[in-house]
Length: 482
Image 1 (cartoon, rainbow, N blue to C red):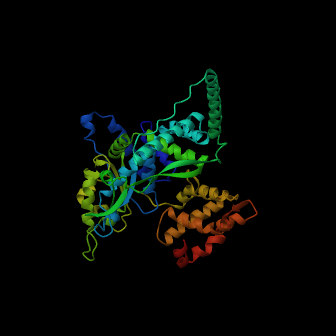
Image 2 (tube, rainbow, N blue to C red):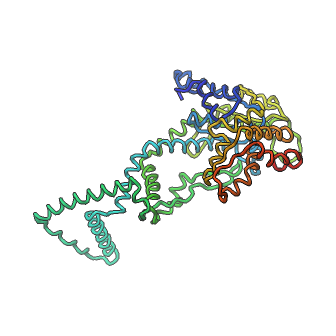
Image 3 (cartoon, rainbow, N blue to C red):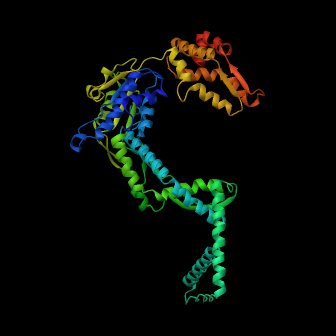
Protein backbone atom coordinates (compact mmCIF):
# COMPACT_ATOMS: atom_id res chain seq x y z
CA UNK A 1 0.00 0.00 0.00
CA UNK A 2 2.87 2.38 0.80
CA UNK A 3 4.00 2.12 -2.84
CA UNK A 4 0.71 3.44 -4.24
CA UNK A 5 0.13 7.19 -4.42
CA UNK A 6 -3.45 8.50 -4.81
CA UNK A 7 -2.82 8.98 -8.53
CA UNK A 8 -1.69 5.34 -8.86
CA UNK A 9 -4.69 4.12 -6.84
CA UNK A 10 -6.99 5.90 -9.31
CA UNK A 11 -5.07 4.29 -12.19
CA UNK A 12 -5.62 0.85 -10.66
CA UNK A 13 -9.34 1.54 -10.24
CA UNK A 14 -9.50 2.71 -13.88
CA UNK A 15 -8.66 -0.87 -14.94
CA UNK A 16 -12.07 -2.03 -13.71
CA UNK A 17 -14.35 1.02 -13.44
CA UNK A 18 -15.23 3.44 -16.22
CA UNK A 19 -15.61 7.15 -15.35
CA UNK A 20 -16.61 8.43 -11.89
CA UNK A 21 -13.29 10.23 -11.39
CA UNK A 22 -14.52 12.30 -8.42
CA UNK A 23 -15.48 9.18 -6.46
CA UNK A 24 -12.19 7.49 -7.33
CA UNK A 25 -10.21 10.51 -6.13
CA UNK A 26 -12.13 10.61 -2.84
CA UNK A 27 -11.56 6.94 -2.00
CA UNK A 28 -7.92 7.14 -3.14
CA UNK A 29 -7.27 9.99 -0.72
CA UNK A 30 -9.07 8.13 2.09
CA UNK A 31 -6.94 5.04 1.47
CA UNK A 32 -3.69 6.99 1.31
CA UNK A 33 -4.57 8.79 4.55
CA UNK A 34 -4.60 5.41 6.29
CA UNK A 35 -0.98 4.88 5.31
CA UNK A 36 -0.09 8.43 6.37
CA UNK A 37 -1.78 7.86 9.74
CA UNK A 38 0.42 4.82 10.45
CA UNK A 39 3.50 7.04 10.15
CA UNK A 40 2.33 9.50 12.83
CA UNK A 41 3.58 9.43 16.45
CA UNK A 42 1.51 7.23 18.78
CA UNK A 43 -0.06 10.13 20.68
CA UNK A 44 -1.33 11.73 17.45
CA UNK A 45 -2.22 8.54 15.58
CA UNK A 46 -5.21 7.75 17.78
CA UNK A 47 -6.58 11.26 17.30
CA UNK A 48 -6.82 10.98 13.50
CA UNK A 49 -10.17 9.44 12.60
CA UNK A 50 -11.12 8.27 9.09
CA UNK A 51 -13.05 10.69 6.89
CA UNK A 52 -16.09 8.61 5.97
CA UNK A 53 -17.58 8.98 2.48
CA UNK A 54 -21.16 9.30 1.22
CA UNK A 55 -21.61 8.32 -2.44
CA UNK A 56 -24.73 9.68 -4.13
CA UNK A 57 -25.86 8.20 -7.42
CA UNK A 58 -28.35 5.86 -9.12
CA UNK A 59 -27.98 2.11 -9.17
CA UNK A 60 -25.51 0.51 -11.55
CA UNK A 61 -23.02 3.39 -11.84
CA UNK A 62 -20.18 1.76 -9.86
CA UNK A 63 -20.62 2.70 -6.18
CA UNK A 64 -20.21 -0.82 -4.80
CA UNK A 65 -17.56 -1.75 -7.34
CA UNK A 66 -15.36 1.21 -6.36
CA UNK A 67 -15.47 0.25 -2.68
CA UNK A 68 -14.89 -3.46 -3.39
CA UNK A 69 -11.95 -2.89 -5.72
CA UNK A 70 -10.46 -0.44 -3.23
CA UNK A 71 -10.55 -3.09 -0.50
CA UNK A 72 -8.93 -5.67 -2.81
CA UNK A 73 -6.23 -3.17 -3.69
CA UNK A 74 -5.42 -2.51 -0.03
CA UNK A 75 -5.87 -6.20 0.97
CA UNK A 76 -8.23 -4.87 3.61
CA UNK A 77 -11.22 -6.64 5.19
CA UNK A 78 -14.34 -5.50 3.36
CA UNK A 79 -18.02 -6.15 4.00
CA UNK A 80 -21.11 -4.79 2.28
CA UNK A 81 -24.40 -4.40 4.14
CA UNK A 82 -27.76 -2.94 3.17
CA UNK A 83 -29.19 -0.42 5.59
CA UNK A 84 -32.65 -1.89 4.97
CA UNK A 85 -31.55 -5.09 6.75
CA UNK A 86 -31.80 -3.21 10.00
CA UNK A 87 -35.29 -1.77 9.46
CA UNK A 88 -37.12 -4.84 10.71
CA UNK A 89 -35.17 -5.68 13.84
CA UNK A 90 -37.34 -7.84 16.06
CA UNK A 91 -39.12 -9.36 13.03
CA UNK A 92 -36.64 -10.80 10.53
CA UNK A 93 -33.99 -8.10 10.58
CA UNK A 94 -30.51 -8.03 12.07
CA UNK A 95 -28.76 -6.18 14.83
CA UNK A 96 -26.51 -3.34 13.56
CA UNK A 97 -23.53 -4.86 15.44
CA UNK A 98 -23.65 -7.77 12.97
CA UNK A 99 -21.85 -5.66 10.35
CA UNK A 100 -18.79 -5.50 12.63
CA UNK A 101 -18.97 -9.21 13.41
CA UNK A 102 -19.12 -9.94 9.68
CA UNK A 103 -16.10 -7.67 9.12
CA UNK A 104 -14.03 -9.56 11.71
CA UNK A 105 -15.03 -12.90 10.17
CA UNK A 106 -13.87 -11.67 6.74
CA UNK A 107 -10.64 -10.43 8.32
CA UNK A 108 -9.95 -13.83 9.91
CA UNK A 109 -10.44 -15.59 6.56
CA UNK A 110 -8.17 -13.03 4.87
CA UNK A 111 -5.34 -13.47 7.38
CA UNK A 112 -5.74 -17.26 7.38
CA UNK A 113 -5.39 -17.25 3.59
CA UNK A 114 -2.21 -15.16 3.76
CA UNK A 115 -0.68 -17.33 6.49
CA UNK A 116 -1.57 -20.48 4.53
CA UNK A 117 0.25 -19.13 1.48
CA UNK A 118 3.32 -18.41 3.63
CA UNK A 119 3.57 -22.03 4.81
CA UNK A 120 2.28 -23.67 1.63
CA UNK A 121 5.71 -24.95 0.50
CA UNK A 122 6.42 -26.57 3.87
CA UNK A 123 2.88 -27.94 4.06
CA UNK A 124 3.16 -29.43 0.56
CA UNK A 125 6.51 -31.04 1.38
CA UNK A 126 5.08 -32.66 4.51
CA UNK A 127 1.92 -33.72 2.65
CA UNK A 128 4.01 -35.37 -0.10
CA UNK A 129 6.02 -37.27 2.53
CA UNK A 130 2.78 -38.56 4.04
CA UNK A 131 1.56 -39.69 0.63
CA UNK A 132 4.82 -41.55 0.02
CA UNK A 133 4.31 -43.29 3.38
CA UNK A 134 0.86 -44.35 2.21
CA UNK A 135 2.20 -45.65 -1.09
CA UNK A 136 5.15 -47.51 0.45
CA UNK A 137 5.52 -48.58 4.08
CA UNK A 138 9.19 -49.37 5.02
CA UNK A 139 9.99 -52.71 6.63
CA UNK A 140 11.14 -51.06 9.85
CA UNK A 141 7.90 -49.11 10.14
CA UNK A 142 5.87 -52.26 9.46
CA UNK A 143 7.80 -54.07 12.18
CA UNK A 144 7.21 -51.23 14.66
CA UNK A 145 3.51 -51.21 13.77
CA UNK A 146 3.31 -54.98 14.42
CA UNK A 147 5.07 -54.52 17.78
CA UNK A 148 2.69 -51.70 18.73
CA UNK A 149 -0.32 -53.84 17.82
CA UNK A 150 1.04 -56.75 19.87
CA UNK A 151 1.59 -54.44 22.85
CA UNK A 152 -1.97 -53.12 22.61
CA UNK A 153 -3.32 -56.69 22.51
CA UNK A 154 -1.29 -57.63 25.62
CA UNK A 155 -2.61 -54.62 27.50
CA UNK A 156 -6.19 -55.39 26.43
CA UNK A 157 -5.78 -59.04 27.50
CA UNK A 158 -4.43 -57.96 30.88
CA UNK A 159 -7.24 -55.45 31.52
CA UNK A 160 -9.93 -57.99 30.58
CA UNK A 161 -8.65 -61.15 32.32
CA UNK A 162 -6.14 -59.85 34.84
CA UNK A 163 -3.04 -61.73 35.83
CA UNK A 164 0.49 -61.30 34.66
CA UNK A 165 1.08 -60.21 31.12
CA UNK A 166 2.98 -62.62 28.92
CA UNK A 167 6.49 -61.32 28.49
CA UNK A 168 7.42 -60.29 24.95
CA UNK A 169 9.85 -62.56 23.16
CA UNK A 170 13.50 -61.60 23.32
CA UNK A 171 14.67 -60.01 20.08
CA UNK A 172 17.14 -62.24 18.24
CA UNK A 173 20.76 -61.22 18.35
CA UNK A 174 21.94 -59.65 15.14
CA UNK A 175 24.86 -61.20 13.37
CA UNK A 176 27.56 -59.24 11.54
CA UNK A 177 26.19 -60.15 8.12
CA UNK A 178 22.77 -58.79 9.07
CA UNK A 179 24.25 -55.32 9.69
CA UNK A 180 25.48 -55.19 6.10
CA UNK A 181 22.06 -56.38 4.89
CA UNK A 182 20.41 -53.64 6.97
CA UNK A 183 22.67 -51.00 5.41
CA UNK A 184 21.85 -52.18 1.88
CA UNK A 185 18.17 -52.29 2.81
CA UNK A 186 18.22 -48.68 4.03
CA UNK A 187 19.93 -47.52 0.84
CA UNK A 188 17.30 -49.35 -1.20
CA UNK A 189 14.48 -47.80 0.85
CA UNK A 190 15.94 -44.33 0.32
CA UNK A 191 16.07 -44.88 -3.45
CA UNK A 192 12.47 -46.13 -3.52
CA UNK A 193 11.23 -43.19 -1.45
CA UNK A 194 13.13 -40.67 -3.60
CA UNK A 195 11.64 -42.17 -6.76
CA UNK A 196 8.13 -42.18 -5.30
CA UNK A 197 8.51 -38.61 -4.03
CA UNK A 198 9.53 -37.44 -7.50
CA UNK A 199 6.56 -39.24 -9.05
CA UNK A 200 4.14 -37.67 -6.55
CA UNK A 201 5.58 -34.19 -7.20
CA UNK A 202 5.41 -34.56 -10.99
CA UNK A 203 1.85 -35.89 -10.95
CA UNK A 204 2.73 -39.32 -12.38
CA UNK A 205 0.89 -40.97 -9.49
CA UNK A 206 -2.14 -38.67 -9.46
CA UNK A 207 -4.57 -41.41 -10.48
CA UNK A 208 -3.39 -43.95 -7.88
CA UNK A 209 -5.71 -44.41 -4.90
CA UNK A 210 -4.72 -44.19 -1.24
CA UNK A 211 -6.62 -44.36 2.03
CA UNK A 212 -6.33 -41.32 4.30
CA UNK A 213 -7.93 -40.27 7.56
CA UNK A 214 -10.01 -37.11 7.21
CA UNK A 215 -11.27 -35.09 10.14
CA UNK A 216 -15.05 -34.97 10.05
CA UNK A 217 -16.13 -31.62 11.45
CA UNK A 218 -19.69 -30.55 11.89
CA UNK A 219 -20.73 -26.93 12.08
CA UNK A 220 -19.45 -25.26 15.24
CA UNK A 221 -22.15 -22.59 15.02
CA UNK A 222 -25.57 -22.55 16.55
CA UNK A 223 -28.38 -20.20 15.56
CA UNK A 224 -30.37 -18.71 18.39
CA UNK A 225 -32.66 -15.80 19.04
CA UNK A 226 -31.10 -12.90 20.87
CA UNK A 227 -32.67 -9.59 21.85
CA UNK A 228 -31.83 -8.33 18.38
CA UNK A 229 -33.17 -11.10 16.17
CA UNK A 230 -31.65 -14.29 14.83
CA UNK A 231 -27.90 -14.43 15.28
CA UNK A 232 -25.22 -17.03 14.70
CA UNK A 233 -22.90 -17.73 17.61
CA UNK A 234 -19.96 -20.10 17.85
CA UNK A 235 -19.99 -22.73 20.57
CA UNK A 236 -16.61 -21.42 21.77
CA UNK A 237 -16.27 -21.99 25.51
CA UNK A 238 -19.34 -24.25 25.57
CA UNK A 239 -17.51 -26.64 23.29
CA UNK A 240 -15.23 -27.87 26.07
CA UNK A 241 -18.19 -28.39 28.39
CA UNK A 242 -20.15 -30.27 25.77
CA UNK A 243 -17.21 -32.47 24.83
CA UNK A 244 -16.37 -32.95 21.20
CA UNK A 245 -19.87 -32.08 20.08
CA UNK A 246 -18.61 -30.17 17.03
CA UNK A 247 -16.12 -32.87 15.98
CA UNK A 248 -17.16 -36.37 15.11
CA UNK A 249 -13.61 -37.77 14.85
CA UNK A 250 -11.75 -39.07 11.81
CA UNK A 251 -13.06 -41.10 8.91
CA UNK A 252 -11.07 -43.32 6.58
CA UNK A 253 -11.61 -42.40 2.93
CA UNK A 254 -10.25 -43.74 -0.34
CA UNK A 255 -9.13 -40.88 -2.58
CA UNK A 256 -6.80 -40.37 -5.52
CA UNK A 257 -3.29 -39.08 -4.90
CA UNK A 258 -4.28 -35.79 -6.58
CA UNK A 259 -7.13 -35.30 -4.08
CA UNK A 260 -4.89 -36.40 -1.22
CA UNK A 261 -2.37 -33.67 -2.12
CA UNK A 262 -4.97 -30.92 -1.60
CA UNK A 263 -6.53 -32.46 1.53
CA UNK A 264 -3.24 -33.21 3.30
CA UNK A 265 -1.65 -29.89 2.28
CA UNK A 266 -4.56 -27.99 3.86
CA UNK A 267 -4.34 -30.17 6.97
CA UNK A 268 -0.58 -29.64 7.31
CA UNK A 269 -0.98 -25.89 6.72
CA UNK A 270 -3.58 -25.68 9.52
CA UNK A 271 -1.15 -27.45 11.85
CA UNK A 272 1.69 -25.06 10.94
CA UNK A 273 -0.35 -21.88 11.54
CA UNK A 274 -0.56 -20.28 14.98
CA UNK A 275 -4.31 -19.68 15.19
CA UNK A 276 -4.05 -17.36 18.21
CA UNK A 277 -1.76 -15.02 16.30
CA UNK A 278 -4.09 -15.20 13.30
CA UNK A 279 -7.01 -14.00 15.43
CA UNK A 280 -4.93 -11.22 17.02
CA UNK A 281 -3.78 -9.97 13.61
CA UNK A 282 -7.26 -10.30 12.12
CA UNK A 283 -8.86 -8.24 14.89
CA UNK A 284 -6.16 -5.56 14.57
CA UNK A 285 -6.55 -5.44 10.78
CA UNK A 286 -10.32 -5.14 11.06
CA UNK A 287 -9.93 -2.26 13.53
CA UNK A 288 -7.20 -0.39 11.66
CA UNK A 289 -7.86 -1.19 7.98
CA UNK A 290 -11.45 -2.51 7.76
CA UNK A 291 -13.91 -1.03 5.26
CA UNK A 292 -17.69 -1.28 5.74
CA UNK A 293 -19.87 -0.35 2.77
CA UNK A 294 -23.40 0.64 3.85
CA UNK A 295 -25.67 0.60 0.81
CA UNK A 296 -29.24 1.90 0.41
CA UNK A 297 -28.74 4.57 3.05
CA UNK A 298 -31.39 6.68 1.34
CA UNK A 299 -34.02 4.04 2.25
CA UNK A 300 -33.71 4.93 5.95
CA UNK A 301 -33.70 8.70 5.39
CA UNK A 302 -36.75 10.93 5.53
CA UNK A 303 -39.63 11.45 7.90
CA UNK A 304 -41.87 8.69 9.18
CA UNK A 305 -45.29 8.10 7.68
CA UNK A 306 -46.64 6.86 11.00
CA UNK A 307 -48.51 3.92 9.47
CA UNK A 308 -47.83 0.18 9.67
CA UNK A 309 -45.58 -1.92 11.87
CA UNK A 310 -42.26 -0.84 10.30
CA UNK A 311 -39.40 -0.07 12.64
CA UNK A 312 -38.59 3.64 12.78
CA UNK A 313 -36.14 4.62 10.04
CA UNK A 314 -34.78 7.35 12.27
CA UNK A 315 -34.33 4.73 14.98
CA UNK A 316 -32.17 2.65 12.61
CA UNK A 317 -30.06 5.74 11.89
CA UNK A 318 -29.55 6.23 15.62
CA UNK A 319 -28.54 2.57 15.96
CA UNK A 320 -25.98 2.86 13.16
CA UNK A 321 -24.62 6.16 14.48
CA UNK A 322 -22.56 4.79 17.44
CA UNK A 323 -20.97 2.16 15.17
CA UNK A 324 -19.78 4.89 12.77
CA UNK A 325 -18.83 7.23 15.64
CA UNK A 326 -16.69 4.56 17.24
CA UNK A 327 -17.74 1.95 19.75
CA UNK A 328 -16.72 -1.46 21.05
CA UNK A 329 -18.58 -4.49 19.67
CA UNK A 330 -18.40 -7.92 21.29
CA UNK A 331 -17.54 -10.66 18.79
CA UNK A 332 -16.61 -14.31 19.19
CA UNK A 333 -12.98 -13.26 18.61
CA UNK A 334 -13.07 -10.68 21.40
CA UNK A 335 -14.01 -6.98 21.62
CA UNK A 336 -13.50 -4.94 18.44
CA UNK A 337 -13.34 -1.14 18.30
CA UNK A 338 -14.77 0.68 15.26
CA UNK A 339 -13.04 4.06 15.81
CA UNK A 340 -10.77 3.67 12.78
CA UNK A 341 -12.94 1.58 10.48
CA UNK A 342 -13.62 3.39 7.19
CA UNK A 343 -17.34 3.64 6.40
CA UNK A 344 -18.44 4.25 2.81
CA UNK A 345 -22.19 4.86 2.59
CA UNK A 346 -24.15 5.00 -0.64
CA UNK A 347 -27.63 5.65 -1.89
CA UNK A 348 -29.56 6.84 -4.94
CA UNK A 349 -31.36 9.61 -3.00
CA UNK A 350 -34.05 9.95 -5.68
CA UNK A 351 -36.87 10.65 -3.23
CA UNK A 352 -35.03 11.66 -0.08
CA UNK A 353 -31.94 13.87 0.22
CA UNK A 354 -28.77 13.53 2.31
CA UNK A 355 -30.08 16.43 4.40
CA UNK A 356 -32.99 14.18 5.45
CA UNK A 357 -30.58 12.07 7.51
CA UNK A 358 -30.29 12.95 11.17
CA UNK A 359 -27.66 15.71 11.67
CA UNK A 360 -25.38 13.48 13.77
CA UNK A 361 -25.16 10.90 10.98
CA UNK A 362 -24.59 13.59 8.34
CA UNK A 363 -21.67 14.86 10.39
CA UNK A 364 -20.09 11.42 10.42
CA UNK A 365 -20.11 11.29 6.60
CA UNK A 366 -18.21 14.50 5.82
CA UNK A 367 -17.01 13.65 2.29
CA UNK A 368 -19.80 13.60 -0.28
CA UNK A 369 -19.36 12.52 -3.86
CA UNK A 370 -22.01 12.55 -6.57
CA UNK A 371 -21.67 9.84 -9.21
CA UNK A 372 -22.78 10.60 -12.74
CA UNK A 373 -25.28 8.73 -14.89
CA UNK A 374 -23.64 6.51 -17.50
CA UNK A 375 -23.87 7.60 -21.13
CA UNK A 376 -23.81 5.61 -24.37
CA UNK A 377 -20.07 6.31 -24.68
CA UNK A 378 -19.54 4.96 -21.14
CA UNK A 379 -21.42 1.78 -22.06
CA UNK A 380 -19.14 1.25 -25.05
CA UNK A 381 -16.07 1.59 -22.85
CA UNK A 382 -17.54 -0.77 -20.21
CA UNK A 383 -18.04 -3.42 -22.90
CA UNK A 384 -14.43 -3.32 -24.09
CA UNK A 385 -11.92 -1.52 -21.82
CA UNK A 386 -11.90 -2.95 -18.26
CA UNK A 387 -9.99 -6.11 -17.36
CA UNK A 388 -13.31 -7.78 -16.64
CA UNK A 389 -15.04 -6.32 -19.74
CA UNK A 390 -18.38 -7.96 -20.53
CA UNK A 391 -17.46 -8.77 -24.14
CA UNK A 392 -14.33 -10.54 -22.89
CA UNK A 393 -16.38 -12.54 -20.37
CA UNK A 394 -18.96 -13.75 -22.89
CA UNK A 395 -16.41 -14.66 -25.58
CA UNK A 396 -14.40 -16.63 -23.02
CA UNK A 397 -17.51 -18.51 -21.87
CA UNK A 398 -18.43 -19.54 -25.41
CA UNK A 399 -14.80 -20.40 -26.22
CA UNK A 400 -15.09 -23.26 -23.71
CA UNK A 401 -17.48 -24.88 -26.23
CA UNK A 402 -14.89 -24.45 -29.01
CA UNK A 403 -16.79 -21.49 -30.46
CA UNK A 404 -14.94 -18.29 -31.37
CA UNK A 405 -17.29 -15.31 -31.17
CA UNK A 406 -16.13 -11.98 -32.60
CA UNK A 407 -17.99 -8.70 -31.95
CA UNK A 408 -17.54 -6.06 -34.65
CA UNK A 409 -17.24 -2.36 -33.87
CA UNK A 410 -20.75 -1.57 -35.13
CA UNK A 411 -22.19 -4.39 -32.98
CA UNK A 412 -20.66 -2.84 -29.85
CA UNK A 413 -22.04 0.58 -30.91
CA UNK A 414 -25.51 -0.90 -31.40
CA UNK A 415 -25.49 -2.73 -28.04
CA UNK A 416 -24.42 0.49 -26.26
CA UNK A 417 -27.13 2.49 -28.06
CA UNK A 418 -29.87 0.00 -27.18
CA UNK A 419 -28.82 -0.16 -23.50
CA UNK A 420 -28.83 3.65 -23.23
CA UNK A 421 -32.21 3.90 -24.98
CA UNK A 422 -33.88 1.29 -22.75
CA UNK A 423 -32.50 3.04 -19.64
CA UNK A 424 -34.14 6.27 -20.83
CA UNK A 425 -37.46 4.63 -21.68
CA UNK A 426 -37.81 2.64 -18.46
CA UNK A 427 -36.07 2.52 -15.10
CA UNK A 428 -32.39 3.56 -15.24
CA UNK A 429 -30.38 0.63 -13.85
CA UNK A 430 -27.03 1.83 -15.17
CA UNK A 431 -24.46 -0.66 -16.43
CA UNK A 432 -26.58 -3.60 -15.27
CA UNK A 433 -28.70 -2.99 -18.37
CA UNK A 434 -25.80 -4.29 -20.46
CA UNK A 435 -26.15 -7.69 -18.78
CA UNK A 436 -29.83 -7.97 -19.73
CA UNK A 437 -29.16 -6.84 -23.30
CA UNK A 438 -26.24 -9.22 -23.84
CA UNK A 439 -28.06 -12.16 -22.29
CA UNK A 440 -31.00 -11.61 -24.64
CA UNK A 441 -28.68 -11.11 -27.62
CA UNK A 442 -26.69 -14.31 -27.03
CA UNK A 443 -29.51 -16.48 -25.70
CA UNK A 444 -29.93 -18.57 -28.88
CA UNK A 445 -26.17 -18.83 -29.42
CA UNK A 446 -25.54 -19.96 -25.84
CA UNK A 447 -28.28 -22.57 -26.12
CA UNK A 448 -26.96 -24.13 -29.36
CA UNK A 449 -23.20 -23.52 -28.93
CA UNK A 450 -22.40 -27.15 -28.06
CA UNK A 451 -24.25 -28.42 -31.19
CA UNK A 452 -22.89 -25.99 -33.80
CA UNK A 453 -20.52 -27.33 -36.45
CA UNK A 454 -18.98 -23.97 -37.32
CA UNK A 455 -16.23 -22.74 -35.01
CA UNK A 456 -16.30 -18.99 -35.70
CA UNK A 457 -19.25 -16.60 -35.55
CA UNK A 458 -19.15 -12.86 -36.18
CA UNK A 459 -21.72 -10.65 -34.47
CA UNK A 460 -22.29 -7.36 -36.30
CA UNK A 461 -24.76 -4.50 -36.06
CA UNK A 462 -27.26 -6.23 -38.35
CA UNK A 463 -27.33 -9.31 -36.11
CA UNK A 464 -27.88 -7.13 -33.01
CA UNK A 465 -30.74 -5.21 -34.63
CA UNK A 466 -32.43 -8.42 -35.84
CA UNK A 467 -32.35 -9.89 -32.35
CA UNK A 468 -33.28 -6.81 -30.30
CA UNK A 469 -34.87 -4.06 -32.39
CA UNK A 470 -38.42 -5.44 -32.22
CA UNK A 471 -38.22 -5.69 -28.43
CA UNK A 472 -36.83 -2.18 -28.03
CA UNK A 473 -39.55 -0.66 -30.24
CA UNK A 474 -42.31 -2.31 -28.22
CA UNK A 475 -41.98 -0.32 -25.01
CA UNK A 476 -44.30 -2.56 -23.02
CA UNK A 477 -42.41 -5.67 -24.09
CA UNK A 478 -38.99 -4.17 -23.35
CA UNK A 479 -40.05 -3.40 -19.79
CA UNK A 480 -40.49 -7.12 -19.18
CA UNK A 481 -37.57 -8.47 -21.20
CA UNK A 482 -34.84 -5.82 -21.16
